[in-house]
Image (tube, rainbow, N blue to C red; front, side):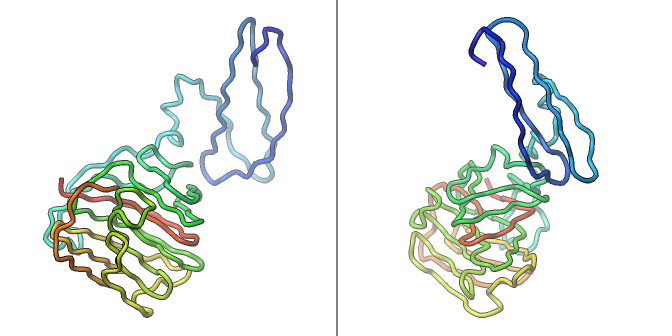
Length: 253
């Protein structure tokens, strides 16, 4: 409200509540005098508790605080390829929105039902650059798989700025480096199964080797003649509509 004279207004809005915490944030102000705000929620079906949280206590609301940066040793993880991997970030998407460590560079991303949903040629980057070696590990599924994939790019979604590791991409999987195909594998063994959670590991090694492991099996490996230098953003992407969970980013720095 920008006028000194008080105004009364009523707004009715229908929303779909998600399981768990649902947050309604209201920002109000007044130039003079007193102000009031009231909220009424009429739920259909079994409801829960409504709790008012003052602004100075918002930091205590779990739904508004994504998982903190997680560091730790990755000793003993599978398919390490001789690298002493360090876990630099992990996200199980248990909140109601993406945390500040993520940057959506294209498409649409939404956290719902305890997982991450992307659609419309969607690229999601960790908002931190890393040098190789880099490891992107996650679970993914889709009704009609069209890339449940990973990347290490300088300017996502620009394919020409690094490494694109495509799993379940039109009947198989492939690795593209700086916009050029390095290796490709066709057939069911390299493709995603509809409605099935797949465990995916995509690794870019310092030597220039790029590896893709799916469900504890090596699907393909690209060997460059020169090492891959420079720092880039790691992340996940889907060309159609994909669901991701338990995303972990590793590095050796």
